[in-house]
Amino acid sequence: MTAILLVGFALLTLWPAYNLALVAFTTRDSATAGRRRRRDAVAPNQHEPLTFWIVVPALNEERVVGRTVSAALALAGPAGTRTRVLVVDDGSDDGTPDVLAAIDHPGLTVLRRDFPNARKGKGEALNAAFRAIRDLTLTHGEDPALVAVGVIDGDGRGSDNILTEVSRQMRDPQVGAVQTRVRIHNRNRVLGAVQDLEFAAVANASQLLRNAAGTVGLGGNGQFARLSSLMQLGDAPWSHCLVEDLELGLRMHLNGERIRYTSIANVKQQGLVDVKRLLRQRTRWAQGNLQCVGYVPKLIASRKIRNHALLEMLYYLLAPWMNAFGTAAVFGLWAVAMWRLVPGHGRTIMIHSWAQMGHVALFWALGMTIPGLVWALVHRMQLGDEKLWRLLVAAVAYPFFLLLGLVSTWRAIGRQVSRRQAWAKTERLVEEPALS
Image (cartoon, rainbow, N blue to C red):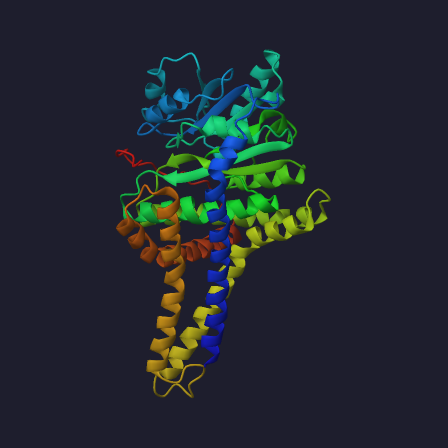
């Protein structure tokens, strides 16, 4: 067995093993979901939110914001609670203001931001919403610990039970935030189906594992936080980071807050079905992750984070970069091996024939494809709302999707080194009928 085959075997056994561990967690969660619902169907304990604010950041969202706001206003929490929606119009110059003006509902508040305050990133828009909600809460004499602030993006739709499930999680007064599952509603396209496989199955399992470790991260869509927990972080809980949700989660953990994850409720969002736009989005996410690596010394020094939780957080922050450099090293070995197979380029190393190279390539292809097929089956068994053939197509495309992520990581490194940190908003598509 050649050296490159040994390296490949090590990598391709560790990765499926990690995926199998995630599958075990997500399978157990599905098996106990019904029992947990019955167990927690008890009387309130006075720690649950009485008011739910749903913040919708909107920058040129005329294609989607009308349905999103209407859906958010229709969400209801447990008996005795109220739902309010605050839309931050972040300097839109399309038809977004007109769409919002046409919505006549007492629970809707529109906060318009114009130059020079507008268009400084989603984090700044959310901070403006936070300050407005905080001031209204204190003016009306409400307890900030009984107010939950949720974020649903301009293309998002919360499931009917989302506020009830957030309330259930916040029965524990130590829980400062809750992250819900994310789904893709336009998954009738291949890229959309792959993203739904990523969010609804793989990321869901990863969050469940982090839930057990106490290291849940917040996502940009479907996050809910107690107003009192946000107030402990000052006037700007969300940061200037390109992934403001990741940094908020890290700051809350450092502050001793508990963050919980629920797979029972979800937010559906629009998937990107254009490779160029998807690459731009993932590059921004990767660059934001790189910016948050600066929190590593604070995490290590913190006395509020247990050792096992610290290791998981460090893995989450550093793994993308280790994967990027590790993959580049492996591809470099392949390139050298192939170069030496060409007559006249010296003695062969690692691989000694093109037939052997074919065997190694087949081994790698199988190792990269099998985890996606497993996740397709998990998705089908857990959710049951997607055709199996579409999931299998998404599974076959999944390795190429991961390769796109590696390209995004290297682009992010280039942007960070060259100090390019402009915030690139995800573009929306004209809405199609959502899949259930």
